[in-house]
Image (cartoon, rainbow, N blue to C red; front, side):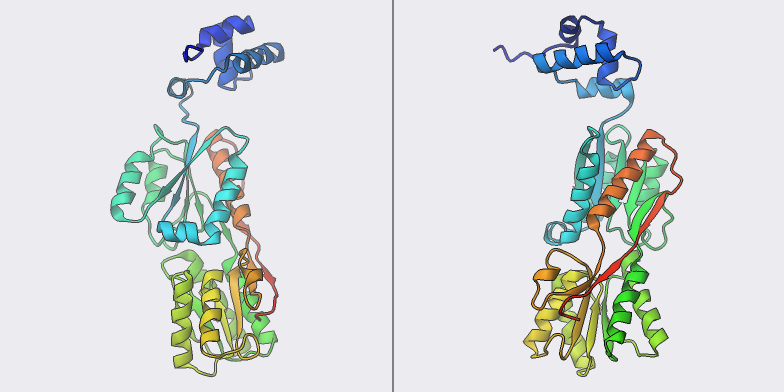
Length: 334
């Protein structure tokens, strides 16, 4: 073996076609007969030909790469199941497209600035963004630069072209109405960050359900991480030792709440019921198994990728916003 890469001309000679026909097959052009296409593909397989991506980019104005930008720390990205679900869904949707997925973390203003300079049509065909906070300038700047962008969730203060979300208000309302129906009357919430649409909407759903039941609010705030759920319950028990239910705005905070309640000798659900939001893989394994609002992070990822592909390809997009329906999953904790 010489280690030399086969050339386009060698593929053409093996297939018995012209160089232009090989280029059209590689670039997915429909202007090739089925017989010629099959001959070219067979020659590519036999020779082990790998197209020159840089050259192909010059011809097609496509990079065959999309970026997923997560505006969180690497600890949260790799520690919380929501992000793993999003990535699995995106990867599954892109699996047959030939597109590469580039994962980028945006943890500081400096990283954001570097990403903004990199995420151009010369490097990516489109961008998926998730876990954004209020008035983030990146989506608008990407769109203005000609980069199609789809968001996972809609931060306050933004009007993105396209995004995917779950009906967070409805999900929170279902959770609290369930607790009310079970006879709970001192229902607290551990709310998420209020510079994120998901945090605002789940708190709103909690408040609407309590107002309809004529019950008082008891609100503390966390950051969607398990440690903040522990801290929040410590504060809640100090403020209202008689509370009988906790709705946490995501499963990691709910799991932290279970740990803190156990530490204080409170039985779940006998003394305090606990409901989360996510229906993560850890929820049925909790002690006791966690009642939670189901949202499919994988479905969100698939829908995000589907919308982005349509925008990249210039396909009609009659519904640029997709809102998924939540569903309460009742287990032993509440």
